[in-house]
Amino acid sequence: MRCPFCSSLSNRVIDSRLSKEGDEIRRRRVCNDCERRFTTYERVADVLPVVVKQDGRREPFSREKIMVGLRKACEKRPVSMDILEKVVERIEGWVQEKGGKEIASSEVGERVMEELRDLDEIAYVRFASVYRQFKDIDQFMKELRGLLDRKERKDVHGDR
Image (cartoon, rainbow, N blue to C red; front, side):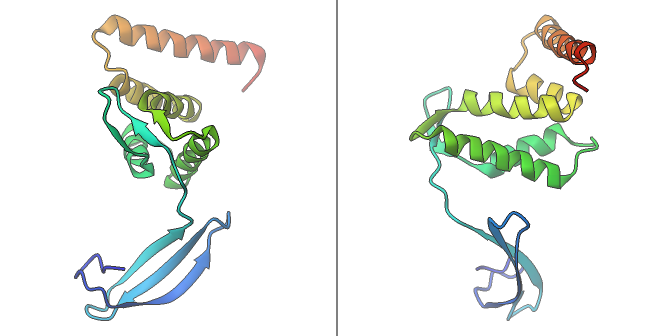
C-alpha cells in the first residue's frame, strides 16, 4: 500500500479491526519512511456490472462516484457521512442483486434519487436538478410539485 503522504511502499499495519457489519477490515498503518499514519479499508472484491452511459460509453461501477454525488447533494445538510456510506452500500447491494453484466446509468441515477427523496428533500431537489438537467423553471416546478404531493400523501396516511 502506497503512503498517501510520501508515496513510499514501505509501511506496516499497527491495528486491524472488523467493521460492525463484518464486511470490511479497517487497517491503521504507519509509513516506515515518513512515519505518518493512515487508514486503509479492505473488502471482498465484488463483481459489479459495467455502467452504460447515455452516450453508449461503458465504465466500471464506482461507489466513489455515487458518494461524490451524494456529498454534493447533501452539502450543508444535516446528513452524516455514516448515513451516506449506508446509502452507497444499499445502492451497491441493489446493483449486485440485479445481476447482469451491464446496468444503465439512468437506473443507477433513479435509485440514487429514490434514496435521497426519503433521506433529505433538499438534497433530493439538488441532485434531481443536476441529474435531470431541467431545461426551464416549469420542469423544476413539476418535480417540486411531485415531491410536495408525495409528502402530503404521507402526512394524510400517517406514514410519518
